[in-house]
Each structure stands twice: as structure tokens, then as C-alpha cells.
Image (tube, rainbow, N blue to C red; front, side, top):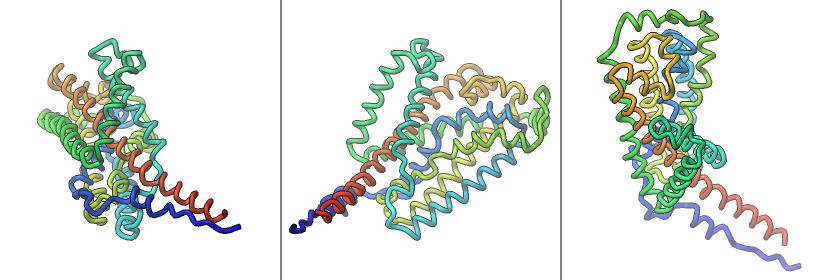
Length: 327
């Protein structure tokens, strides 16, 4: 039987690879992708789980271990960007995990709004489902308008959601109470005694979760102005977000006793600030949570879309080529 060759690689390549005229991402845009995907829901909830598990010293040890491990991972992404510049969309298949994680974002948004509007409940009411569905489609059409526009919106939203965190840190720094910080340093009063190992182990799940998104720049590596910017953006984003998370955690010990922090409602950043400045602090941080989660949702939608666009056509091309060769 005559062998027929079906040439599908060239058109597919044109689909997968950006054109020469495609606007490239700057180092700042790539860094915002890292920050935008890392700063989601986790940072706003850090004070309570840390206070439940450990005091100041244990928190410092936990962050040193977690940050040290994640710093090596950040260097892996930097090395891959420099040594394997042909790798597009990172080294993982994020699509399904990103989609599942995005569902959690909408539940958190509606449960946060539920504190002010009971119709949303804990994010599981009919109204919450309807509004979430509208939001999903709104973000879908935003991403369809083009990755450049979505990336521009991501930069703006990332700055907007980091601003409340910085203000939180500044307010707590001004309100710093040395005697509370010292009392909480080795564990504080009213909390069950535990070894340092048990205290640190109690924070590991939290510290691992909040670093998800460190690979944001790697996923969009094919849009980078320079491939080396991917690794630099990963390091910059990692250092910046880690500094914010450590400060949010440690400064909370300086304004409230550990036992009180451990009993706060989530997001505990909001209730910590409420204890310091009054009810407006709760409202302010709650708005920050909503903006943050919406921004993280956009970043992860972009990640999921990029992987689907970049990996699936390539896989289909490989299957089509193999099938045509066997004819």
C-alpha cells in the first residue's frame, strides 16, 4: 500500500509558537505572574494556623526550612530556563490541578462575602453558585481577548492585592508590642506544650501550600523577552512573597497573645487587624482577600489556558504524525 505522509506539524507549530510580532513579556510582567499566582488565599489565613501550631521561634524555624527548600526549587526553574530554553509552558501539566484549585477560589470568595451578605452562606448556596458561574464566564472572555491584555490586568490586580498586605505589615509594625512578642516567642501561655519538632511539623502543610504558584513565570516562558528573565522573575517573585508571608506571620505575634490568634476566625489577617484598629480593618482586609483571590484566579486561568494551548496541540500533532506514518 502506498505510504501517505500527512503534514500537520507546520500548521500546528504556527498555532503553538508565538509569532515574531507577538509582544513579549517584560521581566516585571513575568515577576507579576509569579507574585499573582503565589499570592492567593493562603497568605490571608497564615496567623491562625501558625499560632495554633507554634510560637515565634518555631515559626522562624518553619519558615527557614520551607523557604530554604522552595529557594532550591526556584533555582531549578532558573537553571531550566537557562539550560533548556526550548521548554515551553514549564515542566508540569497544570491543567487539571489548576481547574480544581480555581473552584476553591470561588468558594472562598463567596464564603468571605457571606460574612456581609448572608445570601452567599459559606459559598455553597444557589446564589453563590450563580454568581460564581457568571464570574467564571467573565474571566473566560477576558482571557479570550488575548494573553497580553490578561497579563496587563494581572499586573494591575497584583499590585492592588499586595497593597493591603503591605499596609497590614506597616500597621502591625507601628503597633508592635515587645512584651507580647517576647511572651509568644517560646510558645506563649494557655497553649498545650509540644516539642519544637511537633510545632514545626504542624506548619509544614501550610508553608508548602502558600508557595504554590512559584512556577508562574516558567509556564509563560515562550513569551519572555529573554529566556533568562524567566529564572530571574522566579527568584524575585519568590523573595518578595516570602518576605511578605514571614512578616505577616511574625508581626501577628506582636499585637495579640498566641492563644487569641489561634482562636480567630478566618481569614485571620482580617481579624488580627480588626483587633488592632477596629471593624474597618476587617472590612479592609476582606476586600483585599476578594481582590487577591480574583487576581490569583486570573493568573491560574492563564496558566491552565497556556498549558492547554501549548501541550495539547503538540500531543495531537505527535499522534497524527504517528498514525499517518503507519498508513
